[in-house]
Length: 290
Image (cartoon, helix red, strand yellow):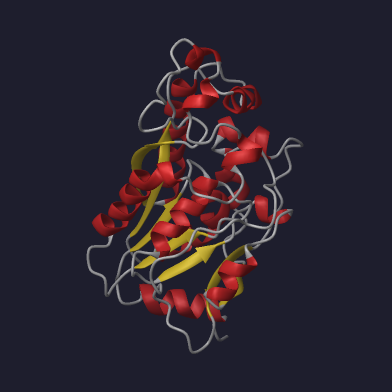
């Protein structure tokens, strides 16, 4: 039986022995969205999951950060993220792929590069004043990357350069930004600007209730393709992220959903076309867990 277009594309690229990196914003996104493809590809080529935002920060926390900690039944964000890093290592080792934790601070906890002048004793009382994204709904989930994140974007780009030093080879899987989380949009932008061959993945489970940014997909003439191989094991892998699974799937049921990847349409190159303007998505995020 002939391969479907997505399988044929991935098989052709990986058949040359070139590496694939999966740019994961947070410590679960790659497996949530790409777990089935990761297992298949990891048996055929070198695969590395590079997770960008793998650290929290000490208190004081914003209200949005405190709500997230309550969702995950955690008190200490730094301990929670240590647990999350351990979960991620275990799951990715089960899949047989390499991993890289880049060490950037998650958007919920990311502070401004420089404190605002004149805050004084007000800062501990209103920590939102010192954060890049003061609130989740009104800032972090609006589909915009803050101007204060210029250095963060630079580090994300350097990560791609380090893992795929040859511009003519390799494949980057990058988040599409479904739901508008700034960390996801930042990762997408780093991939888009990298000059590498990029395939975008639609973020699960957020894509069950939210749509992609039509302006972005139209500008790149992206076509959605489904991946249905090796889905049977995926729910078990997702449950390996114990600190997140209950908040993401409150009823305990993880839907068996095909993975969705977006490739350039027929006749287009699969290499990214250069710098992107940062756009706001037209949909709201599907949930509060980053």
